Amino acid sequence: MNETQKMDHLPLAVTALRQLAPLHLPTYRQFRFNGDALRVPFADFAEADQALLRAVYPRLVELMAILEEHWHNADATLHAVQAYLNASAWVHVVRQMQKFGNTSLATTHHPQLGRVIHDIRGSSFTALSIFLQLIEMDLSDETDISRLFYLTRDHLKIMRNAVQGLDLIGEARDAQENYHDITLIVEKWQGVTHHVQDRLATIHVECHYAGSISESCLEFAALDRVLYNLINNAVRFTSDQQVCLAIFPLDETEQVLRFVVYNRTTAAHLAGLQQHYEDNLGQLFLGGFTTGGTGLGLRICAEFVTNAFGLPSVEHGLHQSYFGATQIDDYFVNWVHWPTAGD
Image (cartoon, rainbow, N blue to C red):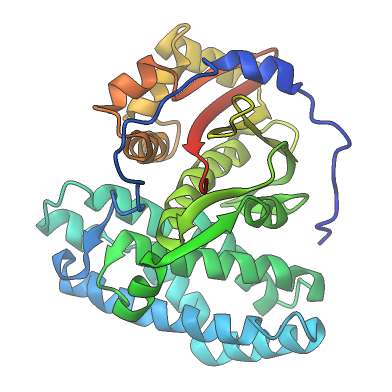
């Protein structure tokens, strides 16, 4: 698989994307958001789901240790991953993960449970599991190892972000001050082939910012949960297997970034959305509407952004365009904002 494809110019100009929402969006937080808004304590899961978390998380830690060698010898790392997958019954793990949370949903009433289950089953795990199955079937090569590295690293951090107490040492490390540069987002998305269930697309990134975007791994994992949800949705519905991510500051102070994810889609899909929402496609961020998913993905994005800016409610955030969605030509366009980090 080829991960080097790159568009010279994204189809929608930044000048047009700047008009999607106001260029002054203040934050109301006294202290920076640390990324811990949408999580569930490990003890609140049903025993069956606790057992599955105990089985999956250490396997990913072991896989990560193998992948960390890929910078030195990708070919040898590929063979090591294949051997590990054969020894660890990975296909069985994936099948079990498809059922993760079902028991807890029937017995537990934590308000964030559905959101956490959504992101542990989905987000980076969807693409990760597909890549591992391709490797297991000998349908990949050493060029896929870097993508697998990013997906594994991201999902470990997302699991620690979403499940409080899953890994106390890792969680404490994630909460420490650690500035994350925007290049960490660009490098793992630019030109990659991203898989979601039976769909795939090439991701194209245009970034007009150089600097930090988060102050800890815990916060960065929250932003990752936002971007994976947006990009996964776009991959599911793209009509030409292309998804675009544009990143730029709102003004010269560079205190807030706009992330715009968009994809060309079919007239039928747009018509279906407009039939439900008319000209208010941003209401998708309120959650509940789905065309084959759970209806939670965009709501999760909205709740994280609401927390990042200290807004009183998701509804307020939508009304003020901190996040939203619209149609431009035959593109379905979503956007969110996130405060930059540092002085």
